[in-house]
Amino acid sequence: YKHTTHNTQHTTTVMTANTTHHNDSQRRRRRFHLSVSISLIAQFLFLPNTNHGWSPAFLMIPLSPQPNVKNNNLFSFQCRSSRLIQSQISSSHFREMALFSSFINDDLETTTHKNHPTFESHPVQVEVALTSSAPTPEAEEALASLASTTLALLSGNEEAAKSLSGDASKKRELIRQTFSAYDVCESGTLSVEEARSLFVDLARNLVTEIANSDAGGGGKVAQSHAKRVLAADERGTNTIDRIASKLLLLADTDVDGKISIIELANVFEVVQQSSSVETFPQPLRALAGSLQLLPKKEGVNVTLAAGKALNWNVGVPGDDHTLRRVEIEKGLSIVGLGRSADASTYFLPEIGIVFDAGIHVTSIKPKTVLLTHGHRDHIGALPVHAQNDAKIFTPKEISPLVKKFLLAEAQLNYGDVTQTDEETIAALGDFDIMGVQDLDEIMLPRNCYLGSPTPLGVQVFKAPHKDGVPAVSYGIFRMKNRLKSQYQSLPKNELGALIKNDVQITESYKEGIILYTGDTTIDLLRKRWKEILPKYKVLIHEVTFLGQPSTDFDESTKLKGHTHYAQIHAWICAFPETTFVLVHWSLRYSRQDVLEFFDENYGGVPSNVVLWI
Image (cartoon, rainbow, N blue to C red; front, side, top):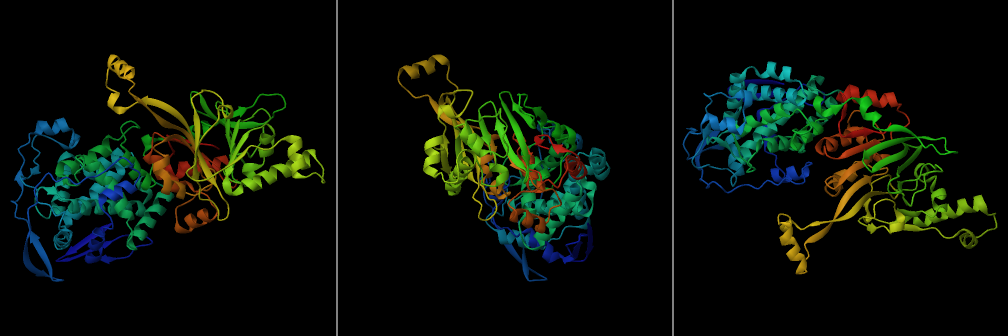
C-alpha cells in the first residue's frame, strides 16, 4: 500500500489483482459514499442490541463559508471555534480510564473543547472540507502503520505489532498525526462525518494489507475475501463501510458518534487487551469474522473441535451402527449422522425428538420427527418412525406427498398391489402428519416429547434451498416463567403481599434450546438472524462446501441450495455464546480434508464450533 504526494496531487496504489491506480478525487469520493447512517450500518452488522443515537449534548455552532476557489471551485470552510484547547484532565484520570495502557505516561497531552462544533447538519460542507485538505504523507504513513498494528494484534501477533508501531512515544505520535489529519474543523473531537472518514480509510488499509499478503493472520480464504471486498468497494458498494462501522463501535465508548483522541487510542488498546473469550468484545469478534480471520486465542485445535463429536455405539442387541454424539450441556445431547447426499438425522434422546430421518436405528424411537424437506437422504427412515406412531412435522407443501410416500412404503411392505390407500389405513392406522409453514409456533402435546414436563414448542422458519424444493428449519424452545422486570428487585415479603392481592407478578417467555437449519443457504441467517442467534443457544447449521470466497463460488453454492464455510464464519465469530454444530459436509471431503482446511486457512477452529466430521 503506497502513498505518493506532490503538491495537490495524491495517488494511491493498491497492489491487488482486482484494483488499479486511482486519483485523489476518486479515492476521497469513496469516503463519503454514505447510503445509510452509521447507526443503520451497525444494526445491519451482527449487533442486534446496539443502537447509536447521536447526542445533542453540544450546541451547534454555525460554519461561515470562506470563498476559496480551488481546482474544482470547491469552497473551504472554517470553524468559528478556537484552535485546539489543551485539556485540563489529569493524567491520573486517564489511568483510571485505562485507555492508553502502555501508550500513556504523565506527559501525555490531549485536546478538548468548550463547545463542540459539529457538521452533522452540513454533510456537504464536511465533504468539501475533508476533500480540500489532503492528509500529509506523514499522516498517511501513520494511518497505514496503525492499520498494520491493528491487524497484527487482531491476529494475535503481538511481537509484530510492537515492531510495527514502535515504543510508547511513537504510538502516541501515530495516533496524534492520524487524529489531526481528520480533525479538519480543529475542534479537538472528530464529528460524525470526520470519524466515519477516518475509520473508512483505516478499514480500507486493513483490507488492502490482507489482500496483498497472507502475513496478516489469515490464509488464502482471507486473501481472496479481501480482494473481493476491495473489488466490491470499487463498484460503489458499502463493504468497506461495514468493516469501518465495527471499528467505530470499538472506539465510540460514549455512543455519541463522535470520536475524541482518547477514544481513538482506545481502539488499539481494546485490540491489544482482547486475549480471551471473556474479554474479546463482540464488535471485535465481528470484525475478525468479517475479515475471515481467527485470532489465535479465540480458536481451538482442529482435532479438538472434531473430537467434540465422539463415536457413539448404540449398544443394543441388533444395532451395529456407530453414530456421532455431541454433548451440548447436561441433559442435552445430539446423536446421529450427517453427510451430504448420504444420510442426515440428528436425534435428541433426552427429549425424544429427531431432526430429519435419513437413517433408522432400531433403538432410536422418537416421539416427534421434524422433517425439513423431502430429499431421500433426509426422509429415508421416515416409514419406520411413522410405524412407531411418531408425530411428523413436514413442510406444508409436501405433506400430501409425504403421506403418499408412507402409504406406498406400507403397501410394499405389508400389502399387495391390489390394496387401496383406504384399506392400508384401515389395517395399519393413519399417520400423524402435520404440515407447517414459516412463522408457525406449535406447542407440543405432552405425549410428543420426553423428559422435563416444562412445555416444549417448535418454531418454524422458511429455509432457502433449491428452487422447487420446499424446506423449513426448526427451533425447539421451552415455555418458562419469570418475574416481571418491575418486581425483580423486590424482597420476598413484598412479592408475597402482591400475590395475596392477586397481582400477576410473573410472565411467560420462550427459552430457545436448539435450532436445526436442514439444507439451506446462508440467506437464512442473513434475513432472519435477529430471530435466531440471540435466542437459540445451539445452532446445527449445514456447511456442505469448503473453499476460497468468490462470486462464482457463492453463486454455485446457492444454486445447489447449500452453504460454504466462509459464508458463516463471520456469524460464528460475532456470536461467541452460541454453539455452532457444523454438519452435512460433502462426501468429496475426507475428515482429514476438513481438518486441513481449517488449519491452513484459519490456524484452527473457533472455540464455539463443533465439527461433525
